[in-house]
Amino acid sequence: MFEPFYQLASTPFSRDIPTDELYQSNSLTEALGRLEYTANRKLFTVVTGECGVGKTTIIRRLKEKLDQTRFLVLYLAESKLTPRYFYRGLISQLGGESKYYRGDARHYLHRELEIMQGMHAQNAVIIVDEAHLLEREMLEELRFLLNYKMDAQSPLALILVGQNELWTKLKLQSHAAIRQRIDLQCHLTPLDREQVGGYIKRHLTYAGAEHEIFSDAALDEIYKYSNGLPRLINKACTHCLIYGAQNERRIIDDHMVKNVIQGELS
Image (tube, rainbow, N blue to C red; front, side):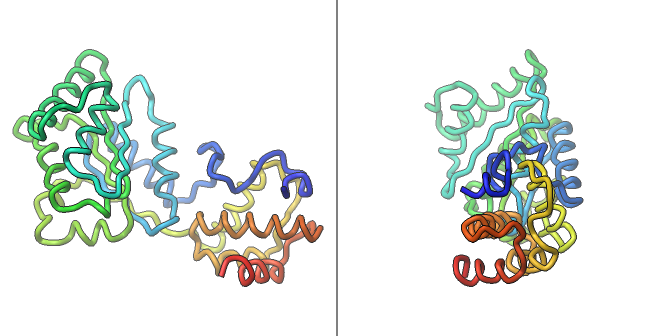
């Protein structure tokens, strides 16, 4: 809709932008380094951050960076994940049939991971998204999964990804056993004002913009609205570009951003 007006070759704030083209803040770079280390060392890591801060994006980036000949990423994202569906999901991704009871499924999974490692030199990286929704039973099952050969060697890397409530839950005394097993923690933070400007510029450059489209004052308003959350930045910028194209405004200023926020995003 707005791409021809602003002479853009692609859509700048969509979800399908290649991850290596995305703006990468210091927080994201540090977290990605920790997750790569987690995969290589087969650790247990927890990633937290508020809604829209970029947790799913960093998982996409990690998956694309890991060498597929050395790592197999197993991804689960269920709002009501139980041990049964946890093992069913993992075994299905490994090409097996989920016909086992919980204990048998755990042993089957361990055996398959040993075969992967022994025959193919391939390590499993299990990622559980929306982990702040996990119930106590599922968290306990993860602890059992990590109990492997008297703790001598972990068979996998495990990454839990969730909103900030996840860490609040893990700090409860009832979850002390699994909390003590956590090797690394990554907390993603929103972008500051300077980073918001860099984020928007990076996305517009990827889309083929040859000149500035948002004024500095417009960037100020987008930062105020989004509080530095990439998801809200994308939303505000997309609405502003549509509004600007419809009104034939080559430069989007702060007044236009305010109109869009008040009229469409409030």
